[in-house]
Length: 100
Image 1 (cartoon, rainbow, N blue to C red):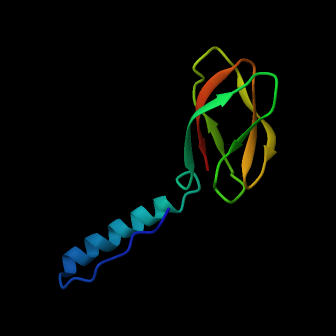
Image 2 (tube, rainbow, N blue to C red):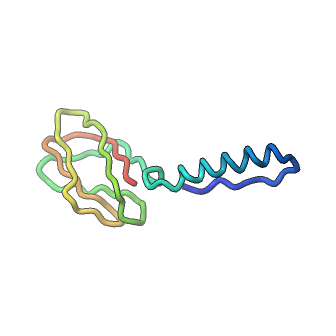
Image 3 (cartoon, rainbow, N blue to C red):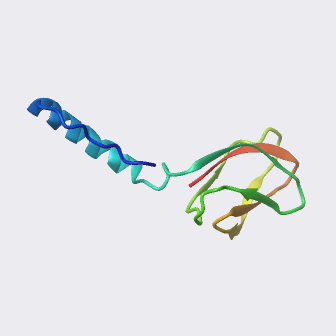
């Protein structure tokens, strides 16, 4: 996530408020969980490795899988690269994923 920049103005109080807001927002922006991608409607097939391309151009530190649209258990196999993660499922399903 990009950092917020300040705007130079001739008002001391406004500059203080701006500086405080920039500090808070940039601190949040530096958190790895914010710098991720939401992948919607990922169709997973049971009984096989499902390669999900995440597009981060780096190895993700966290993969969150949303609730499947059917009764299924979904898990990560442990294979994670800077291009994709490998996901398995107990039943065919569709999920949303947050990868960061």
